[in-house]
Every structure is written in C-alpha cells, then in structure tokens.
Length: 324
Figure 1: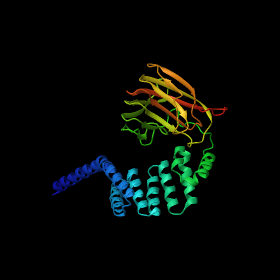
Figure 2 (figure 1 turned 30 degrees about the vertical axis):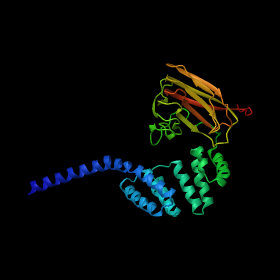
Figure 3 (figure 1 turned 180 degrees about the vertical axis):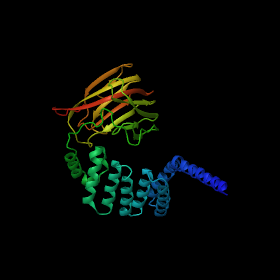
Figure 4 (figure 1 turned 45 degrees about the horizontal axis):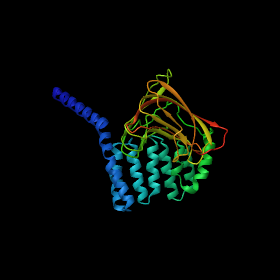
C-alpha cells in the first residue's frame, strides 16, 4: 500500500509540475494571442456605440485578466469597455489595478480621462500631471481645456529644463523593444523614453548593446528596411520648448543615410545627415523648425539604414527662432 501511495504522490507531483509549467510558460502566451481580437471588438463597440458588444468584450477580458494578472494590455482593454458602458468609476478601479504591475504614464492618462468623464476634473489634473512629467508628449491626450494647467504643473514638478531624456540610452524600456511592420506603425524602442516609427512602411527593430565607443555605456542599434524609419522622442509638449537648440548625436552608420532633426513635433525638417559608414561620427546641428520639443533619427534612403547611437544631447541656445 505504501508503494502505491508513494507512486500516486509522485504522479501528483509530476502532474502539478506540468500544470505549473503550462501556467507559467503557456498561459501568458494564450492571453497575449487574445489581445488583438479583443482590441478589434473594443474598437467596433466604440465606433458603433455597441453596448452589448462592449459588455461582452469586458466580460471576456476580465476572465482572461484573472488568468494573466500581470498582462497590462488586458486590463486596459477591460477598462476601455467599462468607459464605453458609462462606468468610469469601475474603469478607474481596473486602471489602478494595472498600476500595481507597471506605472506606465499612459495608465495615468486614462485614469485622468476617466475622472473627467465621471465629473472629477480637479482630481484628473493630478493624474495628467503624473503622466506628462514622465512622458511630455502625452500632453496631447490631456483634455484640451486642462492642458495649460497640467503643463504648468508638470514643468514645476519636473524641476528641470525641457531637454531630451535618456539621451545616453542607459535606461532600458520596461516592456522591451517592439519590431514594427507597416506604414505609420508606432511602438516602444529598446530604450526608455524613445519610440520606434515606421513612417513609410517596412520594418524597424531596436536593441540595446554595450557601447563600442564609451566603455561601460550603452548604445541603441536601429535596423530598418524602408525610408523614414527609426527612433524619435517628444521631450516637451508640442508648441513649447526652447526656440533654438544645438543637437549633438554620436552615431555609427553601417549602411544607408540617417536624417537627424529637432524641432516642433509634427513639423520637423532635417537639420543634418549621417553619411559616413564604418566609424563613430559626431553630428552637430541647429534646429530649422521651432520651437524645439521633438528629436528624430530616421533612415533617409529608400532601402533603410542600419546604425548605432550612444549619445544624443540637446543644448538650448540664447537665440531667437528663425524658422526655415
């Protein structure tokens, strides 16, 4: 009998181990695979003001969130459908649960928007400020009549002049770099604060590596196979920032040509080009578009580019804006 019990116990341990391996390794994958159809359903519910679809999508997403509690995207989807159902207070609760796993600025933006929908405008300002302090470009997502106050408080809270963030690429993105495909694609890069863009299609990927120029430092590797693909950063809200700046970029070009530009978000023109391959080069330029609040490093050639960058610096100049 004892031998049988031991065998059963061993079988139970093996079964439990197999279940745990499935839960840890495969369950998150299954949840991630469900994100896209749930996002599509959410967009349809919003576009057609379809309350039954919003309710069904919320219920499905809520069940998946229990299976994969650390999946932030599922919680964002669930909260979006609750807002569509006119339940901003419940949506805030779901967003706040997401903050337990990752304090992303976009979560604070959505909490602020939900508070506005629920008539809590004063409390919404606090959430918007938290988001804009860490990601200035998110001022565009703030309720229009609150932007001035949010921007003023965010600037005071940051306690530092507007300039590029993580220009040394020493900080990694919390969720890692995304390989993008398709025209107009936008996503996170391997480095915190920097985003990846594929303006004219193709693909763009990034990775952080030890710098070959700065001992102990890091560099970002950018590879794209189409024109106007690369990395960028909105480091101050559009329409704000210093009039004139000096942009300095250390870049190592493997192939292609890279455009470097700083200026007003949405209206940036090239300031300089990196053309020399096989060596580290310091590119220094002044902005043609003003005010300065956005910096980009994009491939200029139709076949794309392959390059490393380990330092981007923005220095404000005491000069007036001379738009070109």
